[in-house]
Image 1: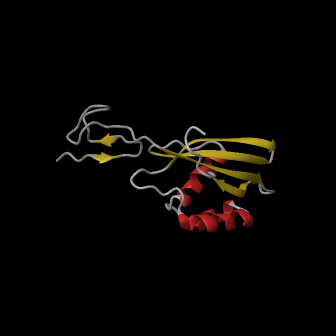
Image 2: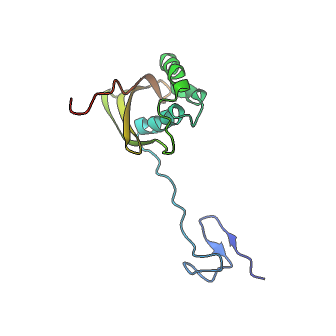
Image 3: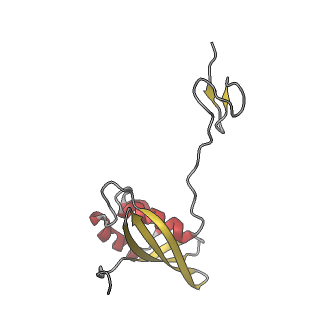
Length: 146
Protein backbone atom coordinates (compact mmCIF):
# COMPACT_ATOMS: atom_id res chain seq x y z
CA UNK A 1 0.00 0.00 0.00
CA UNK A 2 1.45 3.37 -1.05
CA UNK A 3 0.35 6.22 1.21
CA UNK A 4 0.84 9.80 0.11
CA UNK A 5 0.96 12.51 2.75
CA UNK A 6 1.54 16.22 2.38
CA UNK A 7 4.53 17.67 4.21
CA UNK A 8 5.08 21.31 5.18
CA UNK A 9 6.21 23.22 2.12
CA UNK A 10 3.88 21.36 -0.23
CA UNK A 11 6.07 18.30 -0.87
CA UNK A 12 4.53 14.87 -0.76
CA UNK A 13 6.02 11.71 0.61
CA UNK A 14 5.33 8.62 -1.41
CA UNK A 15 5.23 10.47 -4.74
CA UNK A 16 7.37 9.36 -7.62
CA UNK A 17 9.79 12.31 -7.37
CA UNK A 18 9.87 16.10 -7.23
CA UNK A 19 7.61 17.74 -9.79
CA UNK A 20 6.36 14.41 -11.15
CA UNK A 21 2.78 13.34 -11.16
CA UNK A 22 1.49 10.86 -8.63
CA UNK A 23 -1.92 9.31 -8.48
CA UNK A 24 -3.24 12.47 -6.80
CA UNK A 25 -1.96 14.81 -9.53
CA UNK A 26 0.96 17.22 -9.87
CA UNK A 27 2.57 18.82 -6.85
CA UNK A 28 1.91 22.56 -7.03
CA UNK A 29 3.06 25.46 -4.90
CA UNK A 30 0.51 27.27 -2.77
CA UNK A 31 0.33 30.96 -3.58
CA UNK A 32 0.06 33.13 -0.50
CA UNK A 33 -1.65 36.52 -0.63
CA UNK A 34 0.65 39.53 -0.82
CA UNK A 35 1.04 41.25 2.54
CA UNK A 36 0.67 45.04 2.28
CA UNK A 37 3.96 46.72 3.14
CA UNK A 38 2.91 50.23 4.17
CA UNK A 39 0.97 51.15 7.33
CA UNK A 40 -1.69 52.90 5.24
CA UNK A 41 -2.25 49.87 3.01
CA UNK A 42 -2.49 47.53 6.01
CA UNK A 43 -5.00 49.85 7.65
CA UNK A 44 -7.00 50.28 4.43
CA UNK A 45 -7.37 46.48 4.10
CA UNK A 46 -8.64 46.16 7.67
CA UNK A 47 -10.96 49.16 7.38
CA UNK A 48 -12.43 47.81 4.14
CA UNK A 49 -13.13 44.47 5.85
CA UNK A 50 -15.22 46.30 8.45
CA UNK A 51 -16.98 48.64 6.00
CA UNK A 52 -17.90 45.72 3.73
CA UNK A 53 -19.33 43.69 6.60
CA UNK A 54 -16.63 40.99 6.66
CA UNK A 55 -15.34 41.91 10.13
CA UNK A 56 -16.98 43.51 13.17
CA UNK A 57 -16.23 47.14 14.01
CA UNK A 58 -14.75 46.25 17.40
CA UNK A 59 -11.86 44.49 15.59
CA UNK A 60 -10.50 48.01 14.90
CA UNK A 61 -10.67 49.22 18.49
CA UNK A 62 -6.91 49.09 19.20
CA UNK A 63 -6.10 50.68 15.80
CA UNK A 64 -8.10 53.86 16.29
CA UNK A 65 -8.36 56.83 18.61
CA UNK A 66 -11.74 57.53 20.18
CA UNK A 67 -13.03 60.14 17.66
CA UNK A 68 -12.22 57.98 14.65
CA UNK A 69 -13.68 54.89 16.31
CA UNK A 70 -16.91 56.81 16.93
CA UNK A 71 -16.97 57.70 13.21
CA UNK A 72 -16.51 54.04 12.35
CA UNK A 73 -19.36 53.01 14.65
CA UNK A 74 -21.65 55.39 12.73
CA UNK A 75 -20.49 54.12 9.31
CA UNK A 76 -20.16 50.37 9.91
CA UNK A 77 -23.86 49.44 10.29
CA UNK A 78 -24.54 50.90 6.82
CA UNK A 79 -21.74 48.72 5.35
CA UNK A 80 -21.03 51.30 2.63
CA UNK A 81 -18.66 49.00 0.71
CA UNK A 82 -20.85 45.89 0.72
CA UNK A 83 -21.54 44.67 -2.79
CA UNK A 84 -23.52 41.86 -4.34
CA UNK A 85 -21.43 39.11 -5.83
CA UNK A 86 -18.10 40.91 -6.19
CA UNK A 87 -15.83 41.25 -3.15
CA UNK A 88 -14.47 44.80 -2.81
CA UNK A 89 -10.67 45.14 -2.85
CA UNK A 90 -8.12 47.88 -2.24
CA UNK A 91 -6.98 48.69 -5.78
CA UNK A 92 -4.44 51.30 -4.75
CA UNK A 93 -3.40 53.14 -1.65
CA UNK A 94 -1.18 56.14 -1.13
CA UNK A 95 -0.39 58.84 1.31
CA UNK A 96 1.41 62.01 2.22
CA UNK A 97 3.52 62.60 5.33
CA UNK A 98 3.15 66.18 6.61
CA UNK A 99 5.31 65.08 9.58
CA UNK A 100 7.31 61.88 10.19
CA UNK A 101 4.68 60.61 12.66
CA UNK A 102 1.59 61.43 10.52
CA UNK A 103 0.22 59.89 7.31
CA UNK A 104 -2.66 61.45 5.38
CA UNK A 105 -3.79 58.47 3.31
CA UNK A 106 -6.28 57.51 0.61
CA UNK A 107 -7.42 54.23 -0.87
CA UNK A 108 -9.28 53.40 -4.07
CA UNK A 109 -11.76 50.60 -3.49
CA UNK A 110 -12.90 48.55 -6.46
CA UNK A 111 -15.72 46.07 -6.81
CA UNK A 112 -16.24 45.01 -10.40
CA UNK A 113 -16.74 48.19 -12.43
CA UNK A 114 -17.50 50.29 -9.36
CA UNK A 115 -14.72 52.48 -7.92
CA UNK A 116 -15.04 54.30 -4.59
CA UNK A 117 -12.65 56.14 -2.31
CA UNK A 118 -11.83 56.49 1.35
CA UNK A 119 -9.40 58.74 3.15
CA UNK A 120 -7.99 58.51 6.65
CA UNK A 121 -5.31 59.98 8.89
CA UNK A 122 -2.84 57.80 10.77
CA UNK A 123 -0.69 59.04 13.63
CA UNK A 124 2.16 57.17 15.25
CA UNK A 125 1.65 57.03 19.01
CA UNK A 126 4.28 56.87 21.76
CA UNK A 127 4.34 53.05 21.54
CA UNK A 128 5.29 53.36 17.82
CA UNK A 129 1.96 51.90 16.63
CA UNK A 130 -0.03 53.61 13.89
CA UNK A 131 -3.55 54.59 14.90
CA UNK A 132 -6.32 56.24 12.92
CA UNK A 133 -7.57 59.68 13.98
CA UNK A 134 -10.11 60.40 11.18
CA UNK A 135 -12.00 58.64 8.38
CA UNK A 136 -13.76 60.04 5.34
CA UNK A 137 -15.56 58.10 2.64
CA UNK A 138 -16.04 59.25 -0.99
CA UNK A 139 -18.15 62.39 -1.19
CA UNK A 140 -21.11 63.15 -3.39
CA UNK A 141 -21.38 61.40 -6.69
CA UNK A 142 -20.58 63.69 -9.58
CA UNK A 143 -22.30 63.03 -12.94
CA UNK A 144 -20.00 62.03 -15.78
CA UNK A 145 -18.74 64.92 -17.90
CA UNK A 146 -18.88 67.51 -15.14
